Image (cartoon, rainbow, N blue to C red; front, side, top):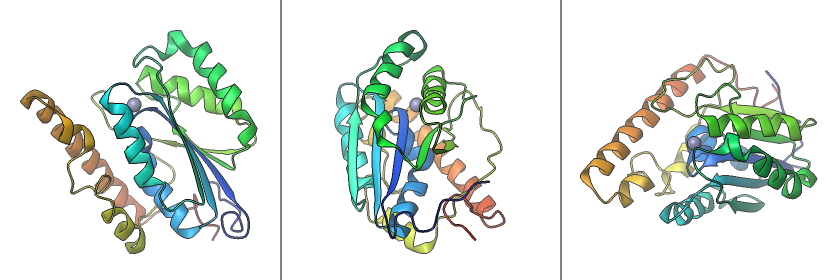
Length: 223
Ligand SMILES: [Zn+2]
């Protein structure tokens, strides 16, 4: 378990880098953590990268990032066009982009995928984080999906009442609203898949919420 310096984000900027292979990854895997960090540390600066988005997903990713980072002291969002599902064969280009655009950020905290995630694109982004940001605290998040590869996290971030209230005020993020992919699905099969995805996301959130009551949240608090 690691902890962040309490002064970061309060007396001086806390620099957070959130990496997601695809649109929605950061919001699903670490959205609550980002909300709570920003709520507790108003001087938090966030750089968010979505490595792969195309078509309508580009606007969705930007709208979602705007909702997630509305209260951040500074928000820098990159939505890129790397090919979904092909990151291992495009790894040199992905890493080259990151080194050219992100290495100078010197983040205190990097949020990224797990290195043993079953999705090939997620693993490339996770490896890139560990290779590039050796001086940062790196926290890996899970994405519920078809592969059923959820693990046993060693840190949970409890979403207190204040944070839940902020989340409910953002209709594009709130769990009781249709997900963005669900609201834009054009066929019944697409809607069914999106609805199924929403159920998996909710079940993961419930699992985390239960565990958070008995596990200390060293991720955001030094106590
Ligand atoms: Zn993904």
